[in-house]
Image (tube, rainbow, N blue to C red; front, side):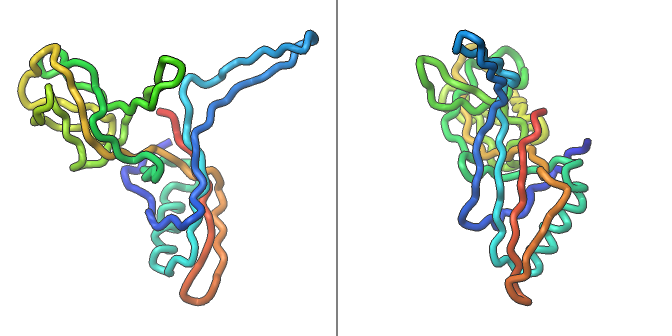
Length: 197
């Protein structure tokens, strides 16, 4: 459906549960071996954000987000507390002219290779791209993660970047229950899942 370019309420309480998931079909064969089919090429984040003893104003902000998102229908920005900032991320070598470069996040290698994700929702005002260690002036599209330099690149020079980024997510339920702890505080939790673009 639609993407709402706003970050959902950040007052997530202790107990935040969040992690990556793939989808794999495993079929046991008559021989006892198994056949595995990786249905997704990319992982997505899934989690539960608990909100404990939040005040009525924060409750109304979260309720407003849920209603605007229409439950599971629409996507929004979510701050990933596990990995929302990157420093010194390699972006490869500079192309020619003023060709835009894509922000990415590369995870630590395992078994001689590493996993890389495309960053499409950088946080405005946090992106600095370096060409051979020197900051390069330019602009970033916070809806795609593309950085366009103000002047031509020096083709072939190494590019790195520092930035923060959000994840496009949606509610994983059309229901958002809350408990009244007392007349000044409410508690509840929101199940959320990444939307692969």
